[in-house]
View (cartoon, rainbow, N blue to C red):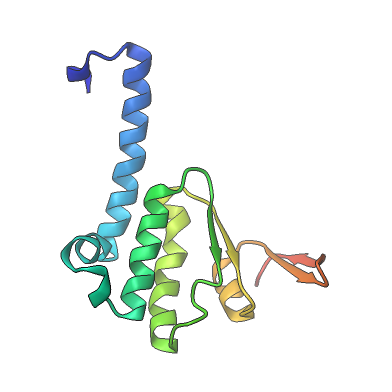
Length: 130
């Protein structure tokens, strides 16, 4: 890190940033996204692969919060099940909290620590899934 002639404070910041990037890259590698993001042109990806690449890009770009708005809405049930497995691991592996917006109660129940239900633009219920 100090090949750049950084101050001690700058070195500490750089090390923290590298640590965060490493954890995100390890997550991408663990779900096969590193290969997928680098090996094929975007136009050749299936719907599920495109969703996974979009997820990978979002994880790499997220700073403090990852907002996912209906990320599975256009996918078949097999792809949904595959991606839900990835989604479950994001916070624990990357340290990035996720705000997951969905109309699918089963997705919310599976992924959330806290479920907030909206009705007519207002909070109708806040609960912890079983």
